[in-house]
Image (cartoon, protein in one colour):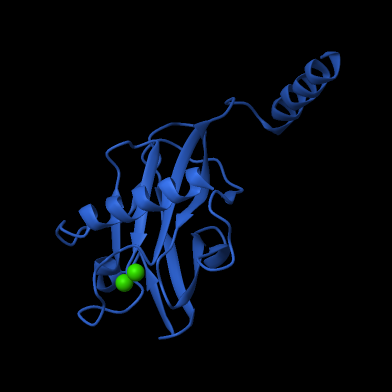
Length: 174
Ligand SMILES: [Ca+2]
Ligand SMILES: [Ca+2]
């Protein structure tokens, strides 16, 4: 419990720091080839309820990932796609209870709702302001997520399955 409180405090401090940044493109980019992206819920201090979605360009649709009031801190989702270095990932945040709204990192008109800290490109933080500016209080802690990139073996699906099999075998031996 102490750890969780520390994480929330860090999330809120970090988001507050980010609030002073200028409006910038909140796009997240893979720093690696053959990377998986894991989205982790860091914390929330908000009255409204919202859902973080991944905008999947392959199907032009949003995929719900995490909820700022229902997800537990540390809950994570791995996106079902392998990203190449420099490939952009966009998200949307939909407020589903409170001041209903939808914010997309792919829409410049919504960029002010997001603050991104990519100082560690393999562990990017996204803070959301869930009330459309200038109405919102710009605390950017209404929902905070981390996007972690993990390099995977650069092989076709069969090889990935094989390596997974090897991993299972080695675990059984223990
Ligand atoms: Ca706010
Ligand atoms: Ca807040």
